[in-house]
Length: 87
Image 1 (cartoon, rainbow, N blue to C red):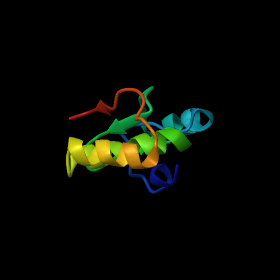
Image 2: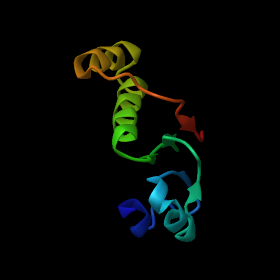
Image 3: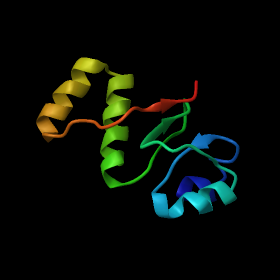
Image 4: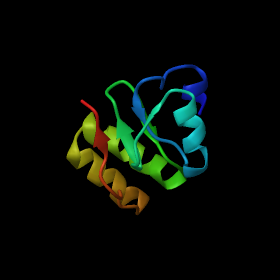
């Protein structure tokens, strides 16, 4: 919601915690029902564990799959769901 308050989500695909989704849409975000939404230079997540999924997605997207799998093993956490990419 900080990104929304700064106007960064206006007109862009994004997500947030389920309790704030109405507010996000009212502030101009294009709400997507997903744990993680990747719109290139804007990546949003819906809550605490989906924040872990966002971090793992960024590692997968940048350094690569092997780095992300290594991080998952270190954290003892497996990423859930599909990341919605908008590009």
